Length: 178
Image (cartoon, rainbow, N blue to C red; front, side, top):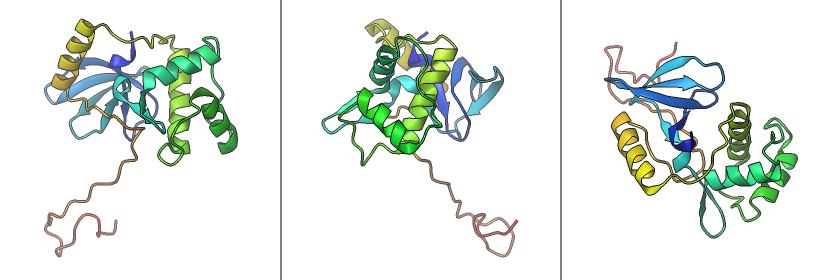
């Protein structure tokens, strides 16, 4: 299995494997602990196959970066994503020397390295491009299942604030004190 069925879900740790479609979204299984969760349209979901990293000249697909890490480590585990900032940046610079340091944050580098190590641990190291037919089928399935495409590094999500009043003195949910 390639990256086409591996998901990152905002607010949830680790990676997930896309299992099946449900009425309200889809079912995914955690690669960390094997637990299955229901993912609705309210979740911010990214397919790893659709994530790209900014460089000074172009956007490089995550699969190519993962392949470079795999080549550097001879198919073994990468450094820990918990290493200090300088060590992580040096490591990533060896992998992708022209990455855009203004748009690729240390948190993005940590996620990429953590994801690589999760995939390595689960022996999901096929970073090759899918054939044209496989790609079309995957796009059809994922669009039907509600996964979104991201062509940027792992985005930082901002909290959504509703401006609707909910019967309590005209305060919005964001201004209420719990």
